[in-house]
Length: 336
Image (cartoon, rainbow, N blue to C red):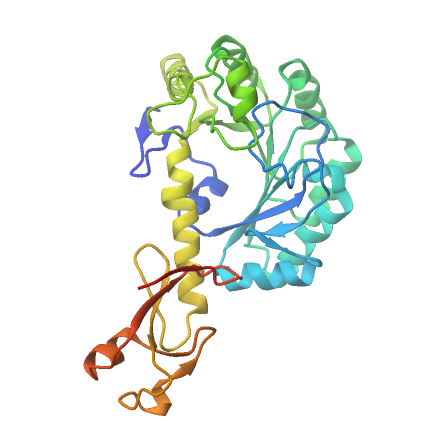
């Protein structure tokens, strides 16, 4: 096997996990099961509004029930979902209910992966996840706890795929390399995902206290990418059997989020709305007394009468360009 660089900037040695394949095509909904977590990682990127709170979201939409969650996933046109937090196992029953509901609503082929620190992983949890229909488990273990978790998984032999998901800390290459070696000798681990370390509003102070510096992109930690690529190279040069995948922060915004928004826009656009290449909704706002647009081609919007840009231009109607995000709020971006 040899390492390959994908068009998204991701680098993979071996086989790209199925969950990642769908994510990079915008085909996965993100289910934030809870902000509760037994760990307190200084680099945790989630917002202070969510961290430590038992909140429940689907694609940034607050949901109060599994029914609302299923409706959002359907609106996004997703073929899978990633369950994250916090740690979803901190609310195990909710997590199992979500998995069962998604499988019942969209079929057994709907791919579900789950992130967990592993601290709450047990035989009971593994039994529940197996019966519910989980497809892929991603562990972010403390290095000292990794061997115990892998022994637990080897005893259980779950029917789903298992991988490790770790951040690329600039000063922790040797520690990460030991985890990679452990994964390679495991009988259950199929892949190791290495994520570029992102700087967010909620973790920036902790990053500065540890002496981390921003990369030129202003979003990631200097040296994180290099450590991740060294890990991929180490697996390749050693001929490891476990797959290793570097996920750069840039691919999340440029591909995962943008393509998911684009698909949601296509699925939710009204007859007069156009979806831009960036995934935003475009339409024309016309004056209330506009006589050049037939009533059958005018629609009532939140700002007034709307029609398609093509109709407005063909009929020579005075109009403004309205641009919205195709999220559940229809967030207004511009009126020009």
